[in-house]
Each structure stands twice: as C-alpha cells, then as structure tokens.
Length: 281
Image 1 (cartoon, helix red, strand yellow):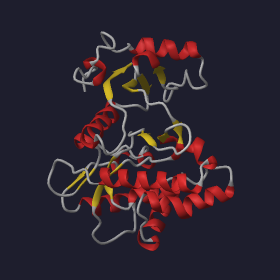
Image 2 (cartoon, one colour; image 1 turned 90 degrees about the vertical axis):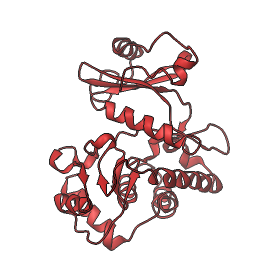
Image 3 (spheres, helix red, strand yellow; image 1 turned 45 degrees about the horizontal axis):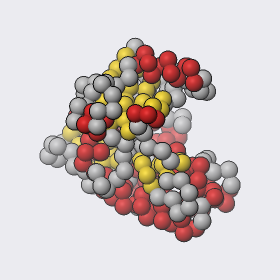
C-alpha cells in the first residue's frame, strides 16, 4: 500500500495537502502525554479532529492490517461500519494507519448501564455484521486459511509460532492447520472470513440513549479461519471485561450466542480451549 490513498474521502475533500508524517504523529503523542504515548509496540492512537482523522501506529501495526481494513471497508460499505483508510506507511520499525476518526463510546464502557432492550438491539446489529463479513470470499478457488494477499495469519495465539501461521492452501488446508496446531478436530469444516478480535473495546457505539454500532475497529487479526474459530475466540477472550459478575455471566451465556452463532461444545469449543491453554494464554 502506498502512503496516500488519493481516491479516499480525505483527498477528495481536500482536507490537507497530505497526511501527517510519522514524526509529526509521534511528536503530538508525546506532547499530549498519554499513558501509552511512548510505548513502541502499541502507543496511544493520535486524533486529528480538524482533519477527521485518527492514526493508529506502533510496532504491532502492519501494512497488512491497513490493506485488510481497506478491503473490508470497500466490500462492506453500507453493511458494516468500518473507518475508511486514508493511507498507510512504515517508519522506524513502526507501522502507521491513517483512517477516518469515528467518535463514540466503546461497548465495554457502555454495556453495564444499557437496558436489556438496548443490549439485544446491539447484539442483533452485530450479528448481521458478522454474517456479512463471514461471507467474504478469498480470491482463489478451494480452501484457504490465512490473511489477505496470501499472507500468514496474524492470530494472537500463534504469534510465537510462525510455522503454524500459514497460509494454508488446497483441499487439505483445514486438516493441515488442525494437525499443526494439534487441534483434535476432525471432519469437514468450512472456512470463513473472521474479524477475530471482536472484543468490547473494538466495538464503538453512538453516544446517548438507544445506542447503535457506529464502528467495528481493529482488523489486525482478521483473515480466513475455520468457521468455528471466531465464536470460540470471542467466548474465551471476553471473560474479564465487566466488573459486575452477573453482567459478565449474562454476556457470556446470553449475548455472545446472539452475536456469533455458537458451535458444538465437545466438537469445537473444548479442543479450542485445550489449544488456548497449551499456548500459555
């Protein structure tokens, strides 16, 4: 991806002659003095309100993430709210993604105070969005497990095991992925596109009463995975987001299955949990 996407809304509207340089972004972050402003791997994103822009950057941010976010934005416009990408670049060992600034509260911030009907409405919206991105097809024929542009998976659990990240091609792609990960799952399993990090902080809601989903962010780990993966990952990774135990239990038992269709416990979830624990997570 080139640094600037000239046909993006940012340039069509002539908001500025060009995108802020990485040095400018870093300098503003340090001056703002955020808690994570000097973190090399995942610093605080920088907002440029006058330009309608947010810059996500750090050693953990990649051009692959920018390209994926652009792909899902282009293909799912009007179906899933995703910040438009204005450009991407690398500098000094860090990646930079320039994107539309979307104002809102995270689901993590709002969930505890929302009414039962508001929660169900949000789940219904998210379920429809998940269905849309799960239908995104890879460009090649046959089964494929991996990220966009035939790149390895950026799955968090596999970050220290590059040999298992793929990509996997062909009719035995799922089998080889399961075999490599030592996942005791047999039989035919379809492959779908997954956001793969649909956690409460990555879901932005409109402010005020009767909130709605205004953006789904952080596409860093997205790609094509076995169909059960997204539900299992979401269920396993959202166990500690709400301080109220009753709210947390209801989130796991009632609301997660309304967002991503649940899978069979014995066939898929229990082997996934074993895999999760085997990675020391």
